[in-house]
Image 1 (cartoon, helix red, strand yellow):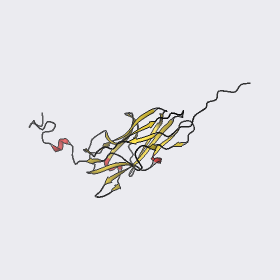
Image 2 (cartoon, one colour; image 1 turned 180 degrees about the vertical axis):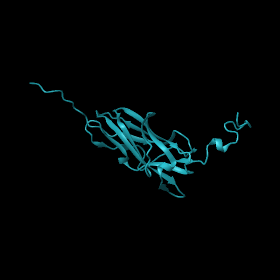
Image 3 (tube, one colour; image 1 turned 120 degrees about the vertical axis):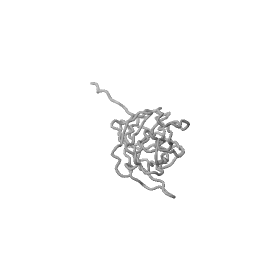
Image 4 (cartoon, helix red, strand yellow; image 1 turned 60 degrees about the horizontal axis):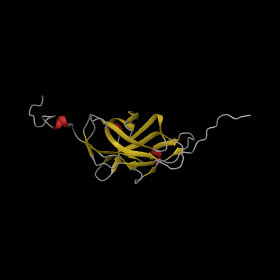
Length: 195
């Protein structure tokens, strides 16, 4: 008498999430591939642990007013927002309902023990985006959807030198692109614009 093959899984641990603090970036209307959030997800452990599956990231868009930040409609500023892992686009939100961005991965990204993944969120600025300063904000640990790949239990990343809410890169949307700013764009030293 013999049993069938049995798989034994180790429970997954908690990856560490470290965000980048970058200065305010000036962007123009219509600009593409604008980075609005950057972080590294590091899953390093000396103990044997199972794999983690990342399946969702959600955030809110905030506009900087005189002394504080207030929620603003994402679709007024962006035409689409994408989630990239190690430079590969894995999810896109082009619906952009209200002040929320929801990036759902069609297939979860598997993060194995010993891996460090670069996570970034990029967007396309609308041609008619209103001027102002904007920032993507990840409110709490539930906004980063991860689970144990095999045991299917929810996992929340531990923060490295940070605390919630996580602040994205502040973007300052300028009124026009370089073509509108300089009569002789792209060469300000050449008076003939058409050349």
